[in-house]
Image (tube, rainbow, N blue to C red; front, side, top):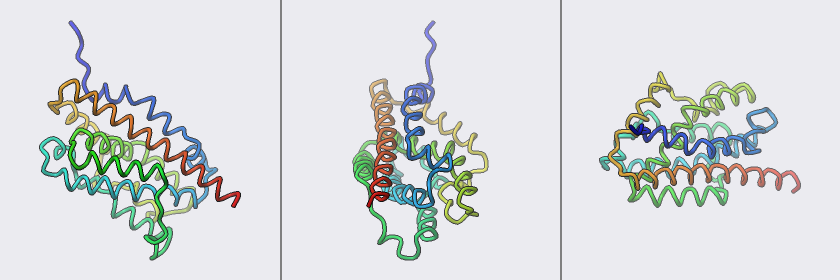
Length: 218
């Protein structure tokens, strides 16, 4: 008898290599290992703002979709925290000082595209960002807090005060993935979109590294 692999398990297994590649990008490695500067951290927060602005606009559009709505929780909302972080890090005129990098522009365009009409694509990006935030993101937040002497200002993005048990939240999310009535072809499309999201993340870190090097020689 053939064992049926749960979709959430297949998704995790199929994307593990892409996830590892994204995490090991030079820019993030330097930031995590203490070689990155406060300006590097601000550059990352800046790009997160554009990504989550698009993702949470898509979330509002998808609230009435019967598939996507299952995954939507206001406990995950990050944009207000990002806005507060940027005001703390850059000052009251922070909006005027932001500029998306080329990969961020492509990433945002893709989120806008799938978030307008394709529930599976929206869920793929929702899964990639938010479950990552509830996993490695919590660890990164604690590191940045110690590295730069932050209390809660500056790292609000990484604080999920309304989610007391991130592991339990993620377990329920994966159960919801397993319950979605997608056929095999749609599941493959969703996995491909998750891989695309990880590729965007990796390329964004490469953009951030290039921008950093360019600033150093300017």
